[in-house]
Length: 245
Ligand code: SF4
Image (cartoon, rainbow, N blue to C red):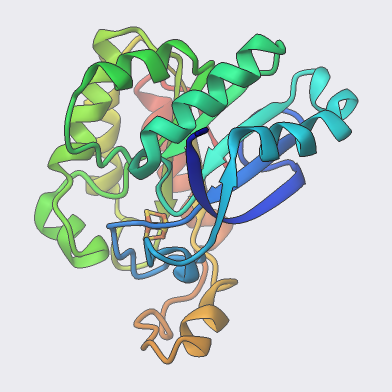
């Protein structure tokens, strides 16, 4: 019997989660609890819809020409690594058909079993979210420690895995120079990191919290100004890092 995964949704023409035009599978389930989560409805690991690798491949093949020129597929979420065996099989199938693969992850990997190495071999690009370097602040923002994420970043560096780091700039949580500098210092020695994407916090997912009857705690936080984004970007650029937003 073929392996199945649980997905929240599919986007056939994604343009913000990796290079080019991409087929994006938003996997169901996440163990972080980010205050700004815009996919609040992906958290429950039992929810979503069950699919096979072949189900996804059929949908991808229908629009293959769009993904050919610099695009590909992205496993996003929720948290894709919670379904590592499925993602590994899916990426293997994509590789067999010459499709670029991107893993969008919060890096909260619990166990380093051989399947992670196999998955990374089948992954062209990792997009790793690092939410906050200070663990106390990380816990306030996500309800969990950053230890696993930072360990995963170091693992990617050791393996020289091509990686983009993503950092969400949230007022009162991550928009200060000190937080940005701590992240820049952590990334600086990592020659596998090609780019740092700075993502301004937005409120677009708030309605999902409301729909689930959950309290959205960032009601008083506004999206960062372009001045703030420039200030944060400068911290990375001054350290010789390639940061964009
Ligand atoms: S890691 Fe992503 S999906 Fe999970 S809670 Fe945070 S923003 Fe939401």
